[in-house]
Image 1 (cartoon, one colour):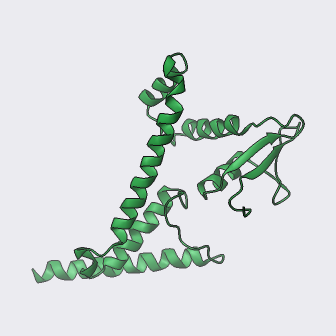
Image 2 (cartoon, helix red, strand yellow):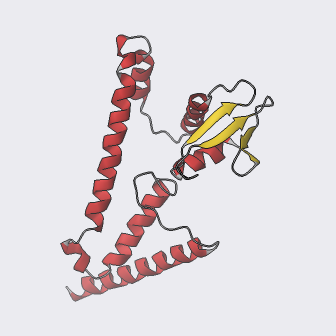
Amino acid sequence: MSDAEKPLLIKRYASRRLYNTETSDYVTLEDIAGFIRDGRDVKIVDLKSGDDLTRQYLLQIVAEHESRGESVLPINVLTDLVRSYTTQATTMVPQFLAASFEAFRQGQEKWVENMNSINPMSKMPGFEAVQAQQEAFLKAMTGGGTPGWPSAPQSEAGEGEEDLDEIKRQLAELQQKLARVDKNE
């Protein structure tokens, strides 16, 4: 199993500081959230006891994002989750959630496949610019990548700005072409 396939091991010291064992440096919860957004699994363990603290820290990351207004979970879902802890559904909820997220990931993959396949719109002038804009939007919405979604290859520093400039240029060209079409009608 390669390093990228193994969960990234994070050790929590008695001081509550989190230590990345691969890079030998301290990390924050936001760093851990970034690793996860990049498709990496993490495992957080207490250095002294060896207890697995991953669930606790993942819940903390979710809670922090929700409290900052980055709401993903509607109130009714949160309410139902709280209710599930007091019912017989406790055994079924994890399986249901896992299956639901797997179906969601598969739906995302299918959507990306359909967007990338040949379709009548691909012959429209400026389609490449629109497609590049959609990809940039999806990348921004998913925090730079979501497991199961194709992601752009990692580039050298500064190339991201060049890509954005290129997208802006293509968008401006598309707008000019559309303006010419409107004038000709």
